[in-house]
Amino acid sequence: MSPVPVNKPRAKGTTVNHGLFVRGTLAALVIFVVLIALGSFSSREPVVKPPENSSNTPPYSAVIAYGTSYGAPNAPITLEIYSDFQCYFCQEFALGIQKQLEATYVAEGKVRIVYKHRIGYGDESWLAAEASECASEQNQFWPYHDLLMQLRLSSSKEDISSEKLIDLARQLGLNVDKFTASLNSRKFSTKVSQENDEGMNLGLTNIPKFYFNGVVANDSIGDSFQNFQKVIDAELARLGK
Image (tube, rainbow, N blue to C red; front, side):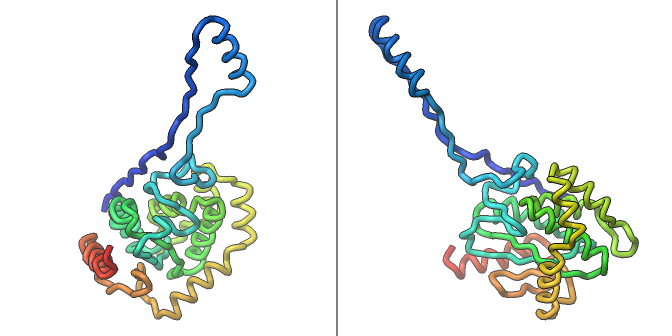
């Protein structure tokens, strides 16, 4: 599947320019002196306050991306995704259907997506998951998530290392020293473990797994974007949205 780009509208704002209307040389001089003393200005208020390192953030629609979630904070539907960076089907979803969801429902403020870790393949999956949380610490989880998924990491061979994960952080322009220190300290192992345990307690044996407002979706939903549309549209109708 080919990813569908998500276009992020530029933040709107207003610029205030102060003009001078003068009569005569003396009046112009007086106003000019006053303006020098007070200073003329222009202001611009962003629609959404940009996150840290926003210059490195891909266009995830004009909504808030924070931690492992993104979308309008008041979106009527929260879609929780249990996933693993080494999982082929998780990669297919992330690079295909998820991009379509971003371009439509997320961009329109109807869906907020939350990523959760469900470890399926051992130590390398743990390492990648913790690295993504280290990126999240700098509010760059989603760009890092995409790079990991694009690597098409394999569950059948050793292709994840700390060096590779640190290099991805470098590519995104993150604070590499901070990222490396967090990764080496394993400061996010507890969070990853808690989410993985949560998935296990829910009986999740197949991933990716999807929950809409706390209700689990049938496994067949991952077969197509149209399946997601049916579920989302039905939930929006139920909520009167």
